[in-house]
Image 1 (cartoon, rainbow, N blue to C red):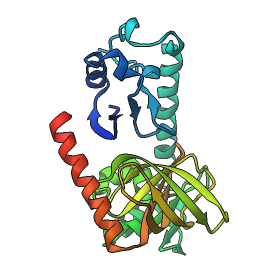
Image 2: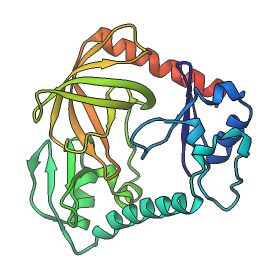
Image 3: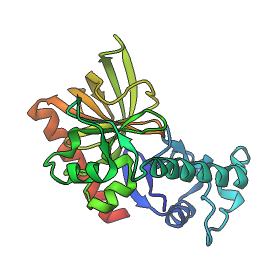
Amino acid sequence: MSKWFLEFQGRVQGPFTNEALEMELRQRQDNEISKIMVWKRGLTDWMKATKWQPEITGDSTAISKNMLSEETNINYTQTAQHQKTNNAVEKTIADTLAESAFFRVQLNYVDQPLMTKPELLNYISKLTDISKLSIQNPKTKEWNEVFAYPDIVERLGLSRRKQPRVPILAQFNGHSNKHPSLGAKIVTISEGGMGFTEVFDLKIGDNVEGQIMSPQFFQPLNVKADVIYSGLDGYIGLKFTEINDEAKAVIIEYVKKFGKITQQGG
């Protein structure tokens, strides 16, 4: 089930189910709708609420026409097809993890011996820090963190991260080991890292250095980070490698504030 987040006048609320977001938008005034932004994992950016329509599910209902402008008449068939495509991508990843296949594995960017799936499961179960583990998809040859493989996560009962990662509207400006100048949209942030979007050439092992800028923060935050996840949906997960105490405190305060907003408005 999709988890949607809503941003209005610097305040982020969520997560909402498809139906809950529809109800929330119905309760808003017309002059507010045009200023509201919504986002979920998989989108390359926040989108205007006027361009949002509920995904097709068994009990979904259509949003009132008077709530959406004429330009937002998105075809439901296209929406359903998009969902099918996402499901197909997830199934492709799962299908690559055949019991008899051999997998390339890196720990802290160092190659490990080729492993069958049972050997891989046994290897992962003994690790104390799986954030440094990367597994190559045998079909796409993409390197991904272990959480890109749902069956491994389920079979080992893995927890994704220690710190909560929450949505944010922010911008990163700086450079990477590949580009002297790098600008990226930040859509998630936590005490330990951040999530980029629309930077498709960053891969696991790359690093960035620069500033995080957001209306949520009173000044730019200087950080260095390594790419630890590169998703098929264009989402890039990064782990902070250098961040001063002041910048970390600002992020922690935002995450706490978001949690309170979620409890009050979600």
